[in-house]
Length: 411
Ligand code: SAM
Image (cartoon, rainbow, N blue to C red; front, side, top):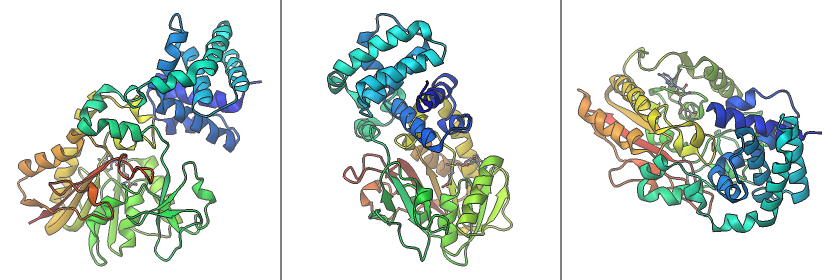
């Protein structure tokens, strides 16, 4: 009988690696299975995606010729179970052989059995010899991250913790650790819906770094502010908690449903507008705008290891065009004295500092940069006053997502 976890993990790998689709979409497309099997399949597939370069390099010497892609997926799942998840050798090999048979790969069961037995015997020693951070990072990202590349890629080897932002008046659920930025941290894999206070809207999930751009905007009660790319709503919730009047703009119909659900759970009632922020016009000029622009999301790889396999260097040009259009629209919404925070969950200079430099020379408005404060991570403030968090910050606490954020004021 095929193990439902392995069968589902195989389908997840196929969708991400062969069709270039996000793992979230692959999870939505799985046939109905027990939620625990689904969670275990997600974890197993994510371990393969996180360490794909290393797993392939461990396997390489044991293969005399390149097996078909589905066989490689079976081998990768077996190798991850053995080397990363400490599964007992006999069970890991037998489950992989069953999976190969169930996926119509019967002629390869002998190969799967032989290769995985050899990995069970000598794989851990081979793994220890490899330069895992380099093998698990595509060259285009490694060069774009410059001298931070090794530290960032090393941090990506570990699964990310779960961070929460607390709603005002609520206490943190048990077993969390308060971070210097005010977020609360829980172990990787924590099921947030099971934490005390979830149903009551006591918190929302938000990486510690993702909570900083909202704080940088410093929205005040009585102000009118727009959150231009709002779903799923972590930053909208922060802005709404400040007492400002918030207008949340989102283009994607499916994501706007999630935004509404999240805000309803939190008992928050900002105005939600289904529109394209490049053409949407606010009712009057605004006090502040948060532009959390669509980007490569390559700052969130430790949380979303599928990103490494579905994003390409060639995607960045089109994203830059959209980021520029959104920046133009966002700046035109500001009243004199109004503030803009531009943020991306990416450490590619082309999506961060280069977009702000281009906007400052392109736009006819007078805009001046306002330096970031420390917000509990002074090491994330750059010499030019922008914010740059990386997964390599806070190594003893488990890192944080990679974000770039800059604040401008319309004079
Ligand atoms: N700010 C969100 C949060 O903190 O939860 C995350 C935003 S995510 C980085 C970017 C969002 O921008 C996506 O939901 C995407 O659908 C939306 N988006 C992309 N292009 C847009 C546009 N032209 N107008 C409005 N929303 C857009």
